[in-house]
Length: 326
Image (cartoon, rainbow, N blue to C red; front, side, top):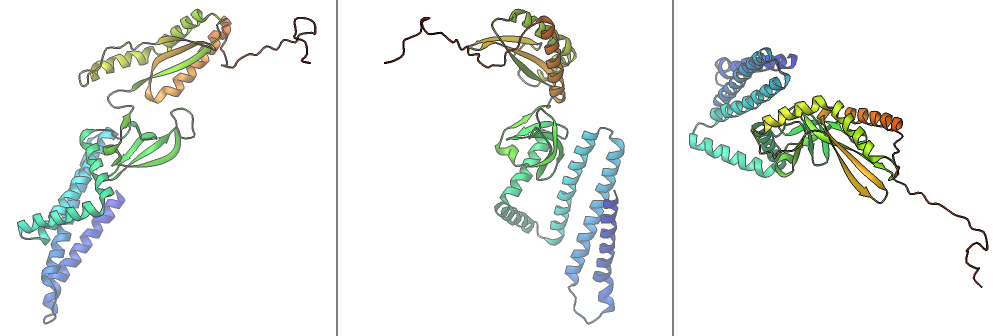
């Protein structure tokens, strides 16, 4: 807010000074040629910018008081800032270009020049418009753009700022770095949104068991633990799927936990599939792993390391061994 008041005060001072130069100074300095028309246009320009800035500053202040949700408050502030710049550009152009046809030509020439000289900037600005209008993502969403994953903490006019996830950190946890992503990426690249319209995802834990262990009992243990620990998440997921099923076409599927069995040359591979909240994926995985290890330990169920055991049998000479080569 202090920054806003500094800008507001500076605009007021500049407007008053320009008014004095444009309307008072020529009367005091008779006989001295001054560009009165240019000075007057400059005064009206500063006056228009000051008025528009004051109106939008008041609107922003009112929105911040009335809106309690932080995400909605942030979006409203961003929309107001875009409208403010747009009104300022229209006001300045209308002051300096009097002929309407010339105004169209002015915007056309300026637009073409900007589009050619600043292609990336224009693309990024267009990307920000697409983000705001279509809701590809919003502040607070967890997204992946190309190979960059993070939580959206700011959407600017040309770039989006992410709080980076993963990187050198295992699991879906923050590294502490801020990733700056050009908004134009949403035009030419797929965007993976983990939290748009729902708050859950499916995760899997894979275990390799030797053939000698009781893999049937292992399946029962995995299923019981997963159903107990993911009960709340599964219930919420069912409700959210019902809701988003009214927006998208979603084929029916079983949301509850499931254990899938695969026969491999190293043992029986068990894949435990379950639902968890997006932001609790690593926490849930760790809790399930601990409970599985405890339960398997009590039931004497072994988990294979995936390595092969090679037995070396030493035979004595004369016990079926081949004679040495002559």
